[in-house]
Length: 116
Image (cartoon, rainbow, N blue to C red):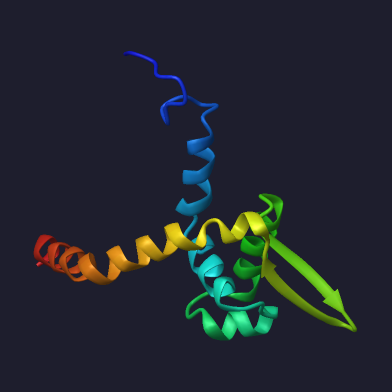
């Protein structure tokens, strides 16, 4: 197999890290939610259907560890915000969201035809 410099197939390729980040089930949803405005933990739980408080906390910590989300505490109030680096993902997430709107129905139809 031929090796390419910067290839996603190489273990140390930065693209692999990007894929790891966005492949997480909840990461893109949390980033998209925070792209709208800073949110408190409870607000994110209410906004994002199906996510538990524990999983949200784990996701936020992971995104903080990547430098994509910041945590700001002021007067006992904690809010999560996108960092400058996190904001660089808003446009790619918007593209994925648009793809999902345009093609999500076809994916569901395919899945139903395979199981039915």
